[in-house]
Amino acid sequence: FEDKMMYNDSGAVPEEDDFLIPFGEADLKRPGDDLTIVATSSMVIAALEAAEQLAAQGLEAEVIDPRTLVPLDKETLLASLRKTGYALVVDEGVERYGASAELAAILNAEAFDYLDAPVLRIGAAAVPIPFSPPLELRTIPNVEQIVETVLSQRR
Image (cartoon, rainbow, N blue to C red; front, side):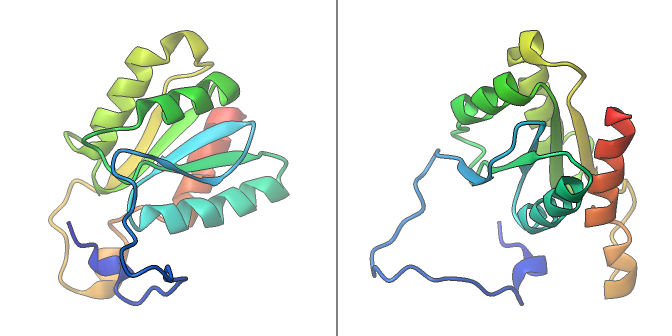
């Protein structure tokens, strides 16, 4: 899938002509010990910004980008949950029946013994996505929503 929210993003480009993202291998974007944020696509950037805000409040969030859902690098996700005990899944898709729901279900089932609270998830509002960019932005997850969700669980 192509995420149009990332069209204007910029970043480092690998020098190698034949560079490939490792298939089925998650990317640890930010280490942390207090909670795990699993974020997909453009939500990785929002999760990293939220992690910085949480760090200023004394919570160190580990941010993981699964990069692929099939195959899913469950080992990296489970190792993080064994360490942190808390998880939040953030996806731009609708919260129900989508990637965030499946990731949360897998983590709740396979990391149950390590969790100190149920896995939370944030996704797009269950409404038709507006054509207007300002209205569209109100329907998808954002940094403030991520921070507030984490803080509401950790209070």
